[in-house]
Image (cartoon, rainbow, N blue to C red; front, top):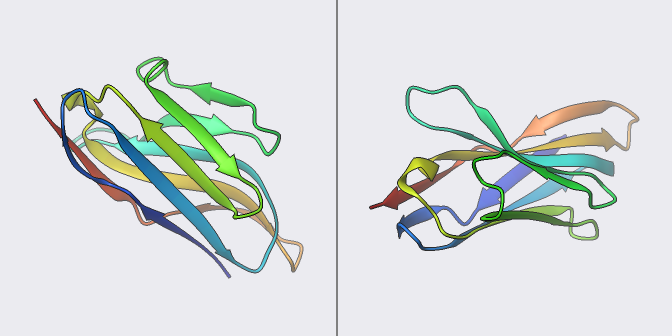
Length: 120
């Protein structure tokens, strides 16, 4: 079984910064792509940023230049550094990982979500 545990959410004023972390636990053979998504009230879940195992990254246009995704393959953890936060960044943030377990099965897994609230 594989579990993703997120931390680092909270409340911040516009212009501030937060760093989210998502650690992966369980019967892990290898973690491939990892990503952060977010879902604001009344809106669909949207992709925020992705990172390959080799470290190649991609970002939604709305966060380019403000957010940075990174990962530690030893700690099986992905991070999202969020700077210059705006009220429109308010959402529940979810991490996602493509994991191959020691049993050989490959599946996408989701974290439980962490709330980020930006007040203007």
